[in-house]
Image 1 (tube, helix red, strand yellow):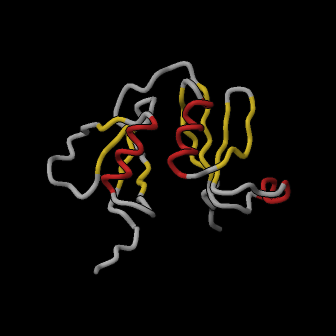
Image 2 (tube, rainbow, N blue to C red):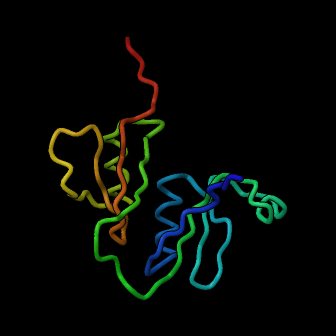
Length: 133
């Protein structure tokens, strides 16, 4: 018997705002929206796919009253696919992310950032194909 990862739930104050931020970061779409919850994913599934969970994992933002108080125990890593890591960091800063220090030290190949509610994530090395002249 095995299990399948179907969603990653994120506690937050403002599910609408955080879902909108992550939709921009990942080019995801809103799949479902209920009171206090917003689910986003990489594609818009059919009703049957939702009911049977035959789709890639989604992010589910759930409204909670308490705020974030400590470093995440789990975080997302994202990799730019069509530009440099520096360009992606600049884009994410424009969307409302901030650079943050979790003790990673200098001269790392990744950049630690936080979303608008302070949840840490890392921007890794770009996956974009580089052309040499």
